[in-house]
Amino acid sequence: MLLLREGGRQLEAFGAGDPEPAVDWLCRRGEKSVALLAPKDWWDAVGRRIEGVEQAEVLTLSAAASQRPTKPAVVTRRLTVDDSAAFLAPEIALEWALWGWGTFRALVERGAGYVVPFGSGFAAMAWVYSQAGDYEAIGVSTVLRFRRLGLGKAAASALVSEIIETREKVPLWSTAPENEASVAMAQSLGFSIATLETFLRWSRPQGFIRTR
Image 1 (cartoon, rainbow, N blue to C red):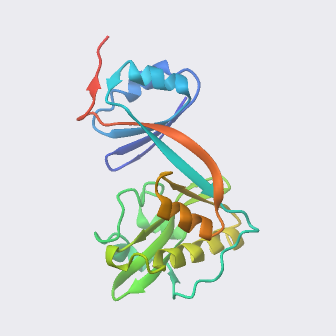
Image 2: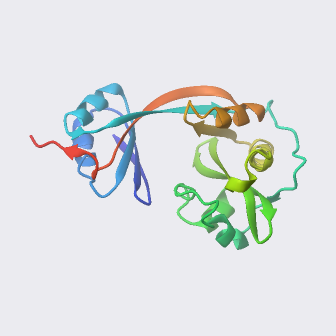
Image 3: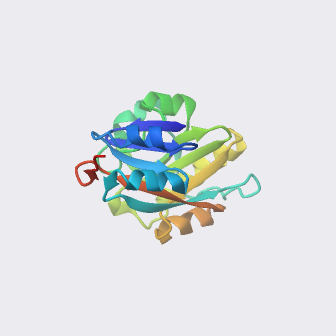
C-alpha cells in the first residue's frame, strides 16, 4: 500500500505491506524528489534500486488540551482570504506551505492561521499545513530580520489555542531532532515529544536508478 502527497517538486509517500510493486513504481518517479516513511523492509527494496538514498530523522511533538499556551503579548490576527499575496511573499513563504491544501483559499476556509502583521505584509506567521483525522500539523515561519523576537512563538501560540479550544483537534509539531531552537519553541508552547521517525529521501538528478 502506498499513500501519496504531492506538492511542487516534492513527493511524500507513506508505505505499508509488500514493498516491491510500490517501490518499483516509486523509484521511477524521476521528475520529483521523494520522501518515504515506511517499514525497514522497504528501505532494502529502495536500496536495491537507487544509490544515494539519505536517511532523515523527523521528530514529532504533540500538545494536549491540558497544555494550552498562554495568550501572547504580541498582537496577532487570523489569516483571511485577502492575505494570499502576503502569505506567499518570498521573504516568508515556504515551498511546502500549501501542500496539504493545494490553494490558499482552501487553507483559510478549512484550516487556520495566525500572523504578526508588519506594514502590508507579515513579520511572522503560523498555519495548519496538514490535517489527518483529529490531528493538525502546524508550520511556523518568521522573516529573517524579525527572528529571535518571539514573533513566531506569538503566532504559533494563537494558532495552537484555536486548534485546541475551537477546532478541538490535537496540534502536531514536526522538526529535525537537531533543530534545538524549533524543539525549544514547541516545548515552551506545551508540546511534548511523541515520535521519532526515519524517512528515506532521494532525488533522481543526484541518485542513480539501478537496472535489473
